[in-house]
Amino acid sequence: MRRKAQIIQSSEDGKRKIAVDEENGESIFEFLEEKKLAKKFAMICELLIRGIKNADLYGREEIDTYSKGVTAIKFKGRQNTRIYCKELTTEDEVLIVIVSELHKKKKNQKNKSPEKSLIHKVASYEYKIE
Image: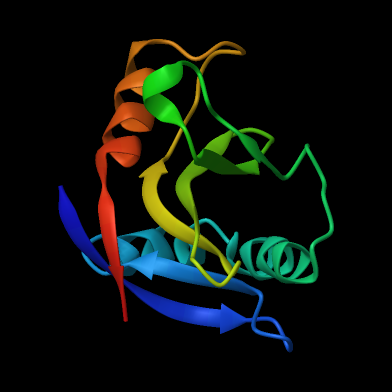
């Protein structure tokens, strides 16, 4: 499925970028504001831009061979919200993390059917970066 994504943040050297799915971006940011998660989201994006790894906040969600490049921004706690992302690496070695789909409330430790379908959905997206 062909989609568009807009760059919202870039590292100083241009080697790491954060983009947002144009169709889902507005609803994702509205939810983050409503649940007072916007500051945490900004902090996680800053860590990604700097290349700092923290598995409690961001990690791979490659549950099978069909979900390569899918990751999740994790907001653990009462809601246990996830934002599923797609990682792309361009020909000139630029890593782009595309914020794609919101999962408002993960209820289980393991990925069950709702999570698996969202992960596969994100994996199927092909992006044009603007």
